[in-house]
Image (cartoon, rainbow, N blue to C red; front, top):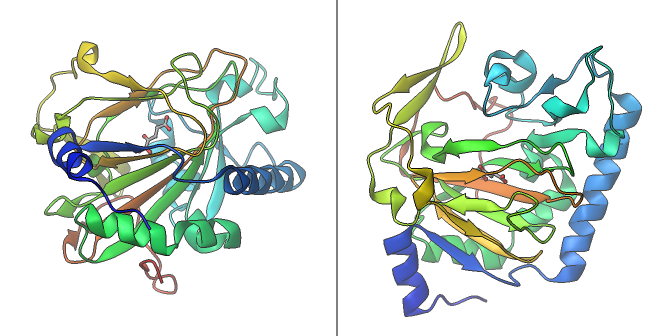
Length: 283
Ligand SMILES: O=C(O)CCC(=O)C(=O)O
């Protein structure tokens, strides 16, 4: 069972993120990667590319799509923009075409459910200050070789708004992540800055309310290069970003977002659970 050191607790409070190498052992990493391959094979067999949508955080076209907006309680794939040629045909192998799948892997897939609900994680999240943890959102982010898209600099609180802010991200590296294949970059102590925008679901899709249009100073971001099996925990108020993957190596990650049930979850967040799948904690 992990027991955070005084330095780690201070880093979490002061920097807004924590890097925990070897949090996941290699057999567990392999198990998740094998499960992902199996799910992708299933999508490849069943899915019409007409049904699915491209996910791009820089273009935000997905934000209006029903494919995206109704994915909060299922496991659904999203393509990379660069996976299609000018005629709209897949131009890479299906296994390298996906941007992500989500957003309820922890509730819908038994392997990810098991991985996401361990005493170790419950214990860690409690030490990170979440009083009543609820597992809200989960994704595999593929960041495939050559075409893996940029994830625009953002805070998770913008999209998973609670009052007061409570969301934290648990990001598990399933491959070694480097500056070459699109590792996470974070703005140290950026969780102390006021939040700059809020995404709201309206009848017309999601709209972004901008409180501060100033772009983040990207020069202040630092890369978080990690080995597979590392857990990066970060505050929902911490600005983070990842570059396109133009390398020939994949950079998969599993990311799990947790909110505190003692806070008020916004009724106009895009992610709303159906009554028959209420949010659960670690048990
Ligand atoms: O994996 C990435 O590149 C981005 C992850 C992210 O934005 C998140 O986990 O909130």
